[in-house]
Image (cartoon, rainbow, N blue to C red; front, side, top):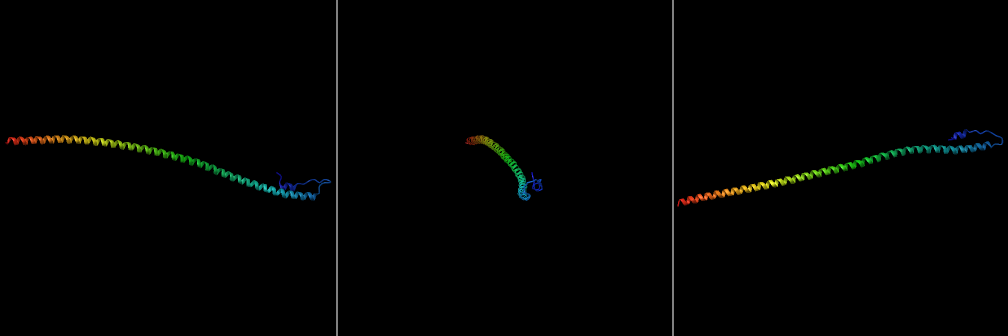
Length: 150
């Protein structure tokens, strides 16, 4: 790319019947000033573009980090939910097992109480029968002794 200094240092050969040197120099000075302004603006724009590209790269990096973080967060959230569901299932299963055991124990206790009740009932019946027999035998003895005394 041609620089403003290149334009300023450019020398033309002189020829017969050439252009007026003063006019050419004035025009070249105008061209140099205009070109120098454009050249400097171009450098500034290139620097701004470079800075913006760096910023864009930083933002792209941040965006990638955020996306990765979001993916990790989603994965972690799904894992937490899955673990919570598994724990809930385990707790429910344990509660159901405990409930079954409690019911089974209660049923066994009821059966034991019924057996004990039936056993007590039998023992009471046996006691009642024996007591009745004892009373009847005592009554017989009393009656026989009363009859013998008469």
